[in-house]
Length: 319
Image 1 (cartoon, rainbow, N blue to C red):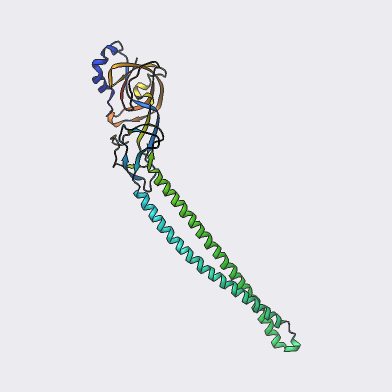
Image 2: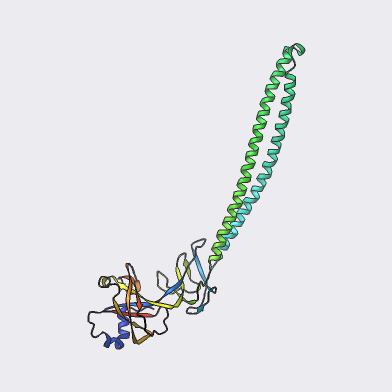
């Protein structure tokens, strides 16, 4: 658990008394060692926005690039994939049956149109016979039959065109449904792949804290999408991450020299300078109701630093 600056002063008081006695107006800020290069492991998107941490590499263990760091539960995605496959298989079967039915109807409509065309031709031949050969009444009947045959042919052809259009629309819908099914499959496969997190760099794995209760994440915990659950850190370039109280922020300047005291090495003091200070702060419930802004301190070059690990507690003294 990270210690407050006041608690750190009590723990380190005996060792720091000689160093701080001449600095009555010193500003004391707590912080921690952090890595300049790291891989953040974020809870990926899930079908229901919640998922379980199935497995995590042991905290503090060394991972090589490509090693599995964290595995999230994939049961929600598996269920969605199964439901999606069933839904699309049903749609595909129904689409196939619809296409077969429309193909038959379209063929019958074209056949009816051909029959109507032949009947129109026959009616046209009879309508050309003059009235003086068959009589006025028969001639009038033939003209009426031709008109009806023409109307029947036009209706049959329009029906054939309509059936063909419906068949094309059904085939297009089937094609779109298949494309949607493939897209859904690729989407859920992407979610599945995202549930297995591998190390993108060599380094140590460290667990992060829950944003609400500040307890460290562990395998078996339920998390939400976008939760920051762990990180893999490269310990070759380390710095001090400060947590600056808003009251102190106005009294600090960039490039200010500082003294650095490590909780793990209370008998040593190191030097550095402030290289970054944010203007936006966050509350930290475990420290009270104050507003804290992150800052950054770089170690001065030429110092013999001990082995540093991310998360080490630090007390920074700014004169």
